[in-house]
Length: 254
Image: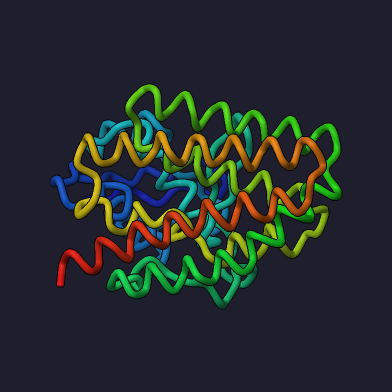
């Protein structure tokens, strides 16, 4: 991979990425490529990643793929983002040492086990969010739900918007360890990133995401109403539906 001369810390580093071929998941491949640059030391702590436009041009991918990849790198602790400025490589001494990495998700059994973990944690998070929400957290949850619905209506995969919705709920708990746990799960929180090639034909994806949109709406409504029991129930149903979907897929592939 051709690289330009090393840039001083804190400015855009001039890495050059060759266009990506169309693998099963462009986001995962872009994350892998950028992470390898960081781990190899070709991108150093304090270096800024290339701009969205530069990454789109170099890798030959959409803005959505770039944003999903940066979000995944942030979840892995490899970069931090500054609104209106860009994404910067983190100091490795400050990165979390324990996380679930995308490469660990080798099978649908792994996906199902992560969903089971999410059911246990996120059900309670929804209840706490309903009990402790304030005006700011409610606005964030409602904004995330609307953004997800708009992305679905536009025919997008809505992975980033889905992740933002769950982040908003974790933040609304008022317990800082919940968002940290979400980052522990990292980019594999949304399972269709891992198994997209197997399940996301057009009609299948559209029908599924329309259902998710309604599930998000029910969760958000319960939190807004301050109904903790209803919020827990709505979140459990939401994640259980996801678990059942992937269990059915696993059975169909045997």
